[in-house]
Image (cartoon, rainbow, N blue to C red; front, side, top):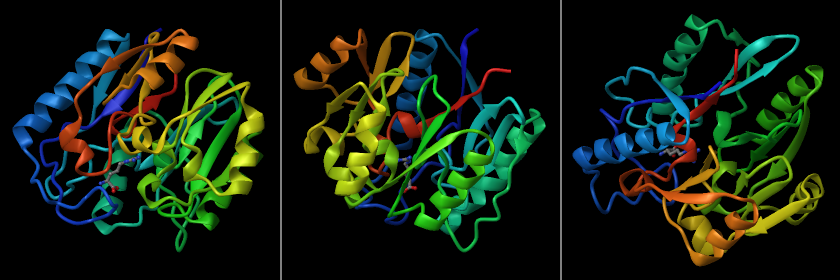
Length: 277
Ligand code: ARG
């Protein structure tokens, strides 16, 4: 069965404020180019065997294109397909949540509302599954709060999912998905500078092979890639990253996301992987 993936067209995408250090707003967004790049990402996902689903974009929700953030999606024996609604830090992003929830609800997902306020939790921006293992990594520090991460962790524990809570310390890696990308069940790409010392020590033992990105690679969103169909979909590539991918039998597939990088996001956060039925 092909991997289903949810994306949101960039119809109203824009950089209107500064939610993270990438959003200087120095160069305005070129919407036409953004649409072409988004089309390119969809084409690459299909090329890698994914089935692309879309949600209708909403005017005024300039970041809705980052489909990974409004909910944390998974599936468990007990609940079936589920979504944990995010409590986003920024008001315009918080308004996305109801639209995404409705999309999930209509498709039979069970909504697990953690009643997060006053804490924050930003979906797959900060919560990443370990492939093939009942484990999730949850980052906190810039967007998701420690309390939000802990609420998700306790919920996961009740569902027999292990949660590894990690403290993020580099503002350029404000979401976990900028510094952690599982390549398969044994290997992971990380940017070590994103984590507190204790968190890094907690993360490493869960993986047989840990590949380290440089600071420049991390800031170039090379840890924000998508693994699909033997490829690593990435906005940029270096010989160093290419060599690490090769050791895991992956081939890079470069997709231009320059317009979205102005907003602090790239491939990984522009989609949500959907669980199989
Ligand atoms: N401008 C968006 C924000 O700051 C970008 C989100 C990118 N998502 C991600 N998971 N890194 O919220």
